[in-house]
Image (cartoon, rainbow, N blue to C red; front, side, top):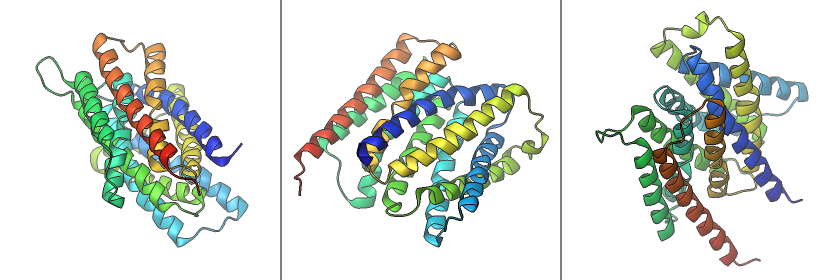
Length: 296
């Protein structure tokens, strides 16, 4: 099996685990852990584990890898900050669907970096995606749900993170880069906890429920998933990575409905349907473009 195929399999596994992470995050928030405290524990915990592994293996870390990881970690933090705070005000299934919309933003962000203009079908996909988000988020009085709005911002930052990481990683060690993006995001989380949550991280008396949810988020959703994503981005272009990872919204919605009993209303179904169709059209467009490219 070639590296591109293995990368695809790895990313689908990441999407499934991330889908379950919406449930774990909601459980942790409902148990009383504040958003920035959770992000601090999640990212710094992952950093300590990866850094320990690198030290044991005596892996050489370059200055470029530290810079790339630290820079990517800024966008990763803001993506998770908006997502996690947004989850306080919306359902886990809606949070998953709207987060998945990051795929629509990637071609436009990539355009800003490379000057490669998106195709017309991407514009159609974007329209359908925004229509789906509107159906999910707009309330009966035509106001936008606050949690859904924050999640929408998070999707933009996830798109930026994917493009930045994909454009900078090149031949660098993915584990080294992942290590320092965890550190960067964790430090920003701690700053957020100090500024907005009065150092609540030092007053947490962990229950079994909280400890289990956080352990799952650190080991699986953060440590394992971002190692796989960072490695996979060496062999797949950013748009492909984003498209595969958007299947997390399907997994997230399924897990939310089954475990958290999120309601499957007509509004949720229709909104999710338009977002899914928009992603399908975007993926079809990329596949067709790939087939038309000459092989040398």
